[in-house]
Image (cartoon, rainbow, N blue to C red; front, side, top):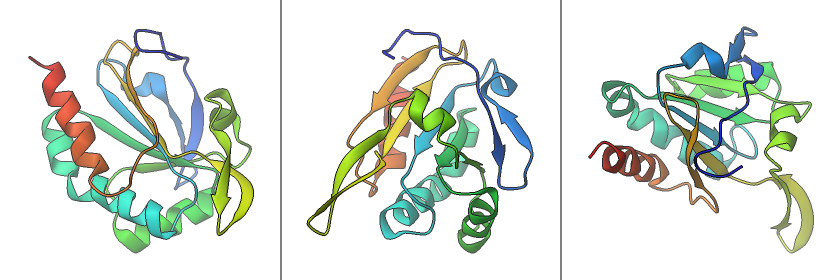
Length: 154
């Protein structure tokens, strides 16, 4: 997938077990941020960054969705623990994660393991891909996404 491509619709369950589809947000820009695992240090920093900047995203009319391979129950616990104001989508069967080819080898304390590569997709109101943020650093990422959105409006 590259910028300009139409993003295929998908449906995953949110933390409450409700179906959420990309097409639910037609006409609005959407930030999809994929993270490795709920309630781990980097994912918490990243998710809380989006939480802290959430009113700015709302004012800009942008939908924020977090996605990981966690279960609905784990997403609910994570959302409640950190008071996250946006939906967390559960992809335990790796449907969307595999579609976006995000399972990559990672070095975990000197051991090579396969895990979800922290990646963010900015999707336009026409459901076309605007930008892919790869090799995301959790600190300051939400502000980085906001800065790009604001630069797109000019």
